[in-house]
Length: 147
Image 1: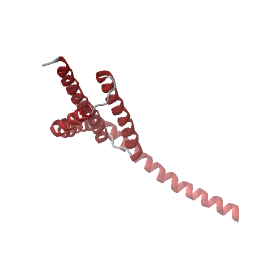
Image 2 (image 1 turned 30 degrees about the vertical axis):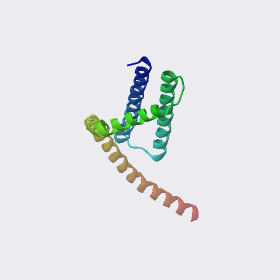
Image 3 (image 1 turned 180 degrees about the horizontal axis):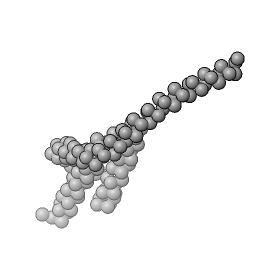
Image 4 (image 1 turned 90 degrees about the horizontal axis):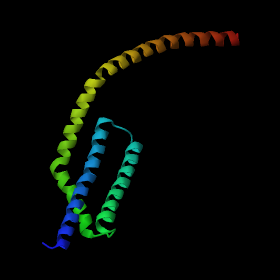
C-alpha cells in the first residue's frame, strides 16, 4: 500500500472516530437530561453549545489532519461513525447508564427527600395557622378603621 493511500485511510478512520466521539458527547447530554429534566430554554442552550463544540471538533479534525481542506469523504466518514455508534451502542448505553444513575441518585437522595417533605409539611401547617390569624387581624383592623 502506498504512503498516500495509507495516509488517506488513516484520515478516514480518524474521521469515523471523530463521528463516534461527537455522538458520545450527545449521549452524555441525553443521559444528563434523563437524570435532571429541565425546561425548553435550558435544552435549547445546551443544544447550541453542543453544536458549537461539534463544529469545533470537525474543524479541528480537518485543520489538523487534512490541512484545512474540506473533503466530502471526511464529512461522510464523520457521519458513518455517528450512524455506526448510534445503531450499535448508543440507545443501549444511554438507557442503562441513565437508569443506573437514576437508581443511585434515588438511593442517595432518599434521606434528603424525607427531610424535605417533613419540612414542607411543617411549613404548610405554619402557613395555615398564621393565614387564619392574619385574616382575623386584618378584619379587626378594617372594622376599627371604618367604624
